[in-house]
Image (tube, rainbow, N blue to C red; front, side):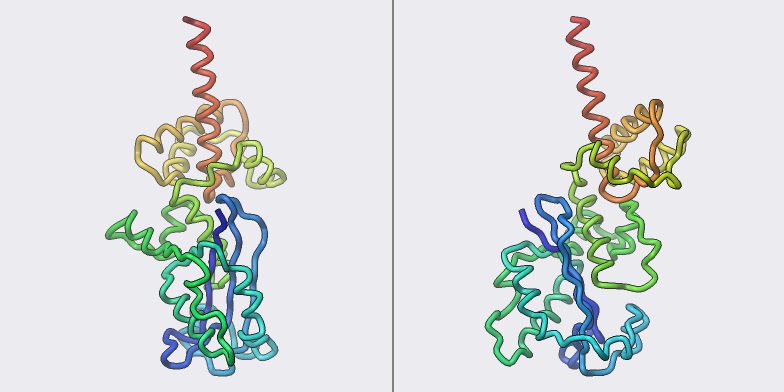
Length: 266
């Protein structure tokens, strides 16, 4: 399954006021794994930015002066997203702006973006899973222990990266990633390595990190605890979707050992 996590930044909030896209960022997931393929563009909107928008994304008029116009990159964008499922947080906003930009083309042969890709609104998904709670990207990052400390301003590609991690955690974690792959991914991060995490630390971090039902969370946390007795645990393992893959892999290995032991004893 091919999914594209997408975000935009704009000059303001309303297309009916002539506001335009100034930043476009998206990245590719195939079968719930990041491929490394992405698109990222800034655009000259040929109009002034609202002060309120500037305070959100921090992109200045001067920075955009030498950037291309949206129409110059539309073919590349559409070729990249067509046939995929788009993952967008508050999809009506971004789709509204993308379709507005398409409508401004001298020859719009594409029509609307929804005719070329399916759309999954992750805000709607989050509201369904967490009714009555805050479901902004920042709130979801906190809920799923996704590190967003660097997010001083909004940014299209930066926010797409965070959303990808939140989405994978929110929909069950990146379970295809094996334990060895997880550990290899974080090899070399020695400054974040913890040679002896206490039981309380692991319990607290594990419970905060694994955002599932309490029974499943407890099972995963105990799996992490059993592993901590034998090897260092990297704090990075508790960030984002990798935490679930790591815990599940340990849990799987423990269950296999228990099964083997049961067979031997019978």
